[in-house]
Structures are given as C-alpha cells and as structure tokens.
Length: 456
Image (cartoon, rainbow, N blue to C red; front, side, top):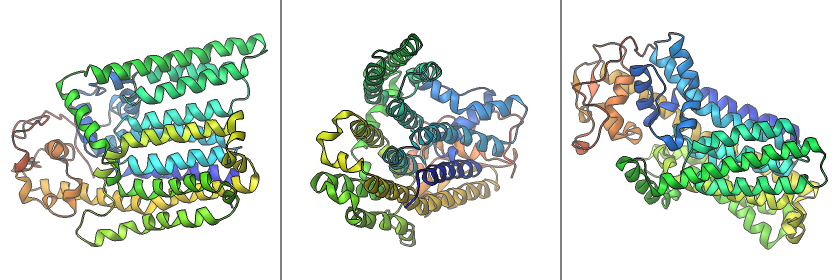
C-alpha cells in the first residue's frame, strides 16, 4: 500500500503530466476554446463576455495573452498556451489541496477521489469555468479541515481567493454556502482564547466568508436574472442536460465504485479494514480500464468527449458531498458513525488511500483514447481545409465516423478559421441540418485574423 508521501507526490506528477500533455495537443480548444482563440487573436485582448464568470475567464487566459503581448502570432502555440491556462488553473488548486492533505491518508484519499471522479472524467470541456470552481472548492475545503490555528498569511490568501470567487461560476449558488459554513466553523473552532494575532487572522477568514457569500449571490442573481436571452437559453439547456449525467461512461464507472465503498461502509463498517469492499468496487474500475476497446464497434457506447459536458452539474454536487463527508470525518461528530471511527484506524485509512490511488489510474486509458482522438480530429480538420474555398461539411472526413463524435455544429467555421495555415486555406460550413441557427460569423465573411496563422 502506498505511503502518504508517495501517493500525494504521484498524484501531483500525474495531474501535471496530463495538464502539460493536454495543453501540448491543444485540448483546451474543444468547442468553445476555438471561439476563444479566434476572438483573442482577432482583437489581441482578453475574451470575456459573461460578467458572472469574468474572473475565472480572465485568469485562464493570462498565459495566452502574455504571449500575444510579447508578439507571438502562431495560433498553434497560442492554442497550447490557452489550453495551459485552462488546465493549469484547476491543476494549481488540486496541487495545493493535495499538499494540504498529505499528512492525513483519508483526506489525501478524498482529494485524489475528487480528481478521479470529477476532474478527469468531466474536464474534456476544460474551457468551462466549473473546472476551476470545483478545484477551488476542494482547496478551500481541505484548507479548513487541515488548519489547526488561524494564520495571518493564510487569511490573506483566503481573502484574495474569496474575492476571486465572486465571479467564477453559477455553481457557487450551492458550493458557496458549503464554503461559508466550513469557514465559519473553522473560525469558531480556532478563535476561542486565541491571541490577538490570530484574532486579526480571524477577521480575514470572515472576510473570505463574506466574499463567498457575495459569490453565492452573484451566482443566484445570474440564474434568476440571466445576463441575456442566449444565457437564459444556455441555462435551461444545462438544467435539462443535468439529468443525463449517466451518459458519461467515464464518470459512471469511477463514481459507481466510490458509491459501492460508501454503501458498504454504512452497512458493514468494520470491513473497511479488509479488502472485501474494495475487491467488489474494483470491478467497475476494471470495466473503465477496458472501455476504450468499445471504440472497435460503431456505437455510442464508448467514452465520449461530448458526454462529459452533461456531467458537470452532478460533478459539483459530488465535490460538495465528498467535502461534507470529509468535514464529518474531521469533526468531533465522527464518533457517531462507526465507518468514520474505523477510518481513523491506520489499517483502514491505508486501504482507503490505496483504493483512491487506483481510481485516477483507471480513468487514464479512456483519457488517453479521447486525447488521441482529438489529435486526429484536429489533423483531419487541417487536412480538409487545404482544398481551399467554402467547403460543405458533408463532403469532409469530419462528417464521418469517428470524427463526427467531436463535431460541434455552431463552432465548425470558427474551428477551421483557427487552424488555417494561410489565407488560401478554406472554411468548412456548419452541417446542413444546422443552417439557420446562430453562428459567430458567416463563413463567407470571416473575421480578419491579421498576422495570426496556425503553423505546424
């Protein structure tokens, strides 16, 4: 069984290796990412259009904007840097959470489980700011659970992060109250009889809680009073899709085993110190490891990049549920639940951590499969536009299996504009079935990209 040190270092190496690889292959351009890249290149400035998420939007674009200001005009490299901003931001928060949890095997397992259940299987659409919020919430929650006394420096950091959370993502409407409660609990627990220095730190913790409350209000207001008609339509679509979270095979077969452990722990808590519950839960992980083999059949029963999008709401709820369970584990109330008492015993804690370490490894094969599919898709797009002119989508390889599984209708023309190597390259039209719907620009009149081209 892995030691705490090995587990947290290995987890950090894994998530950063994936972040760098995903950035190198420009996976951050999937769907909206292409639109972001075109807008950034066309206006040579940050692309932000939705006030309730503006802080997360700008933070994710810092690497690419730094390159633009320094004169980089290669859209391929700018796509990599945009991807790095999108992947790097949540990865920084998860890294910090792993570091904070490194001394407690159960809390460390909690962070690794969140990465395995939520981040890896729900982040193909990494441009979505929910990825940053869930990582942010994990770090704040673990910080509150591992802080023994209030610290001035930590209070400053939390206050700054609290201000950042004011405009991060609509899911703050339910994530925010949990962060507020955990912060107030920590202040109440640590401030009793504390010296003046810690009381000054307590003010900053409370300020962070106030900022979390402001973020919750902004999220609530953006839901009840959408920014515009398109935002209202998008919100309705998101709520409709939320019930289809189970369409994401990667999420199902890593979340399912976690549920097996939870139910088993409630029914037979003493078994957490044995291999029994983990042996049964490992069946789901084994299926997930083998899931890329389903791609040999022309069916939709396989890991799908677009299916990850429908799991994002459930992903946030899972993060909150796991953090609440970790809170119960660290509080004095844990003695009321036999499973939590067992987890405080070293043998059970080590097995719990060992199983958590298997979870992200089980997601890896499907992640690699989808990433390789993305690389092929981008290469095929670049090959098709070399014929020049206005190209009907139906006449391209992208309209056929398996490339079509990565196609998003509205972004088709924007995608081809982003990967053009010269003005002679063509523009692919959206699918005929999509004609008449909204597109960022008319393919016959693309925006002027100036000196920006995709150089292989």
